[in-house]
Length: 249
Image 1 (cartoon, helix red, strand yellow):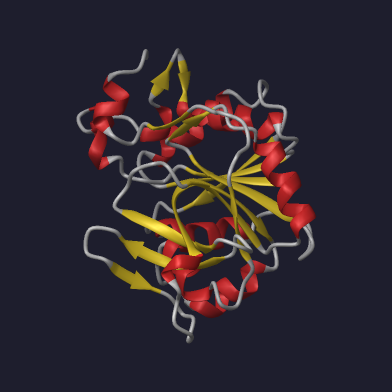
Image 2 (spheres, helix red, strand yellow):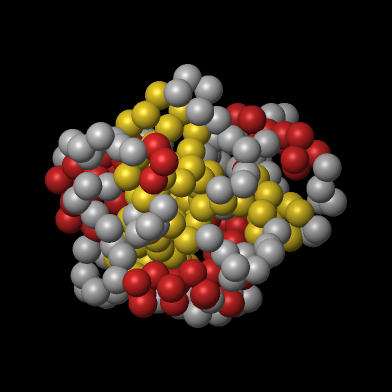
């Protein structure tokens, strides 16, 4: 199985920590966030990982090159030095570098998510379900923006800004609010490689787009399933300054 680690972000919320260092190379408990993410991928059986780079890209590449002997997986670079592509177009470019055919699956995670979540369990559920995309979600985590899922099928039906009560959905029929589940997205997904074709059609050329926009606009065309872990796990967004400041570096 292949994996993608999204590590190209500017880390603006973590300044001044990121003034001289990419967010993915910040350390928690003596280990970079990138290496935490690689380790989690490898424990799930991933044998090739694509890492996208932009902010301090040369520093990221030097770190990977100097640690290749420690990694059990092949590490490849999706280079965004010329232009930061955002999460959607970034995944699109990285997916093109993965191995396999349309029946294969790819685990995607944000480099700034510190977690001991069992990626292997989610990937197994994804493959059994036949979904095109599976998203780690948490109905209990408080956040302004949440994804909407059908409570019976667990399939994605849209997105909601909870403060503004704004709903986005491509579904033509009226969305019955008594039949949906609101859940926060955890920045971890499993994709079928066949999704790349629709991504290429969604925004052609070198346009940037966010992955959440892609999911919202195409949840009527794709089977996008929610995954709610049945065991407790640690999940921290270290992209937030107040979270990172409270961690042991």
